[in-house]
Image (cartoon, rainbow, N blue to C red; front, side, top):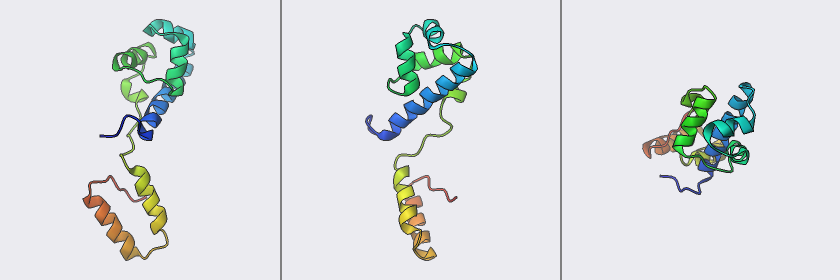
Length: 119
């Protein structure tokens, strides 16, 4: 399980906040109006949208209702697997290596349970 201070979690909340903001703007709704509908302050909505503040599950549901959105539309499509940055780094390091070495490393990573996907 990722550490609560993991950068991936911060990215997750920033992405959710960005999607909330986009949905709010598409609904032509102010931060103040959304805040009033879900029982928050305008500044809390601004912080949620910026990813500076995490939201409780009940607030997430209230926000999706207020924006007339399905929760799946606001959640990221697929979270990055823990260690995905390592895979990207490995790909860069192996770019000039022989195909046999690249194949060996991909197989080893796959056996470790990573979500490695070739482009």
